[in-house]
Length: 397
Ligand code: ADP
Ligand code: MG
Image (cartoon, rainbow, N blue to C red; front, side):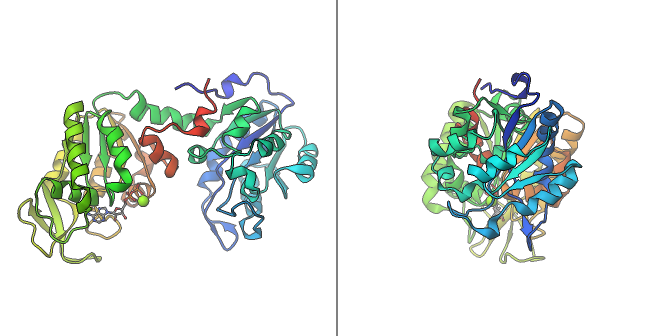
């Protein structure tokens, strides 16, 4: 799909941009504990200012459910953002109405203003056109730079884009371009790794992927469900035994679309899920009644590495084992480091996303070496499911 970017915005000198950003940052004791999301917004803010535009930033923070909740104010973001930008950032106590209009009116040329939490208003989550119209009064055009919020049709992501001229910001553009490289129009062979705990939460994702990938490695707890569905004994492992038929359907659908499935051929088991618990390798067929499958075995890991070796593109969501508890992080860490080495030398386009996946890549120390790591959570998963994201659709060229 094609979408409008800042390249399409024409002359912006002297205009005011309303920019939807993701400032839903981790806070500790009222202070920003991780400024990754603030940094992500800098290229767009700088580009707009450099073109002579004023920047009005719009964001949500947590879930105030349409009411003003003082603890969920965005005010603590002002100081760290100003420090990163190297210029003052003004703040308005409300994102619409007289207070917001006064603050926009007081902005100097190339000034930056942050508006209060957009979710203090019920019209945000109900995608209310009247609320979007109030937002639109503040600016000449709209920029969406928050991929992580693009799966929600909210006033600040969807309705607003129908009122003002609307463009993708730099971070959103890069995210969409990278995701397109991974799954939209990938260099082949393209492989996937999908792990995590449950098939049931990733059903749409698996169904979409088998239609698009040349190979798909399935790991983590969800692989147990597949092994069970194939008639293997999985002992006391986590699995969704009622999803066996679904797993068999996915296997059949992969075969129909010519997607080679890589299921575990051996496993790492323990009787306890605890740090340093004794880990044993078992072939399929050797899993005892007390055994819990907690990681992929060495032969399985080798076949995943061989597949990565033969791939031009890798898309990864979900760890291969209980990576939070060593030694059951082994296969995840090894596969991640292997993929990262290939990505670093540009033999492989390696794209990953998902909350626990990002944590696992950080644990392996390789998040920086991947071609792209999405921190968008729900939006990333919906995109992997092949869904149209309303916030992106609203920017269609
Ligand atoms: P993401 O957040 O990246 O989408 P998920 O939430 O689907 O990933 O899955 C991550 C979780 O899956 C982790 O908490 C991990 O411990 C768990 N997991 C992985 N393998 C197993 C397994 N064999 N048994 C139980 N849990 C597992
Ligand atoms: Mg998770």
